[in-house]
Image 1 (cartoon, rainbow, N blue to C red):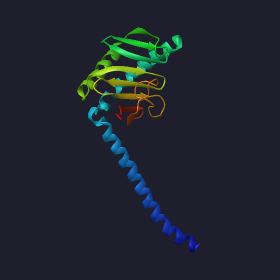
Image 2: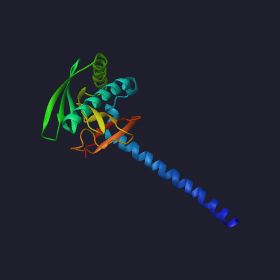
Image 3: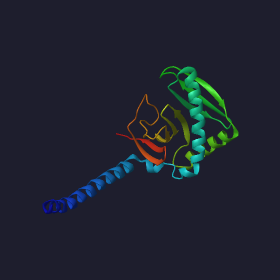
Image 4: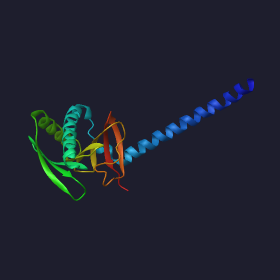
Length: 187
């Protein structure tokens, strides 16, 4: 028993030092990736102020997506036209086959859409350009850089920035819950 205590007393400090060194390296690596990604320049820093609007709009988009998927087995949707009371949405059956639908918005969803557009204009972005919707996630995309605010289904990290058909090498930073900042990495 004394021999075990002696060995334990020698190994424990070494194990703790190794744990601290490994944890520090992981943290430093993540910070380097964050800085290299450039995301800090474009992210919507006050996301919590806009979260309810993002959630209202993404809930409505998923409702539209699943209704269209049930009718026509679409693989993704792209919200390309955002007026005060109307959305223009491209529904993709595959990469080359698509059709367009128009959705009339309630006053609440229209106001939430305007708030999201303003959030993108108030950051270092050129505004909200489009929104992509798939089974796994919704990405609200800016125009200046390949940056997006992403909401995922479930609790997994995003697998792609905008489309599963064209996955990009991207950096994702968790905001809260199911929300992430995402930016395409340049090589």
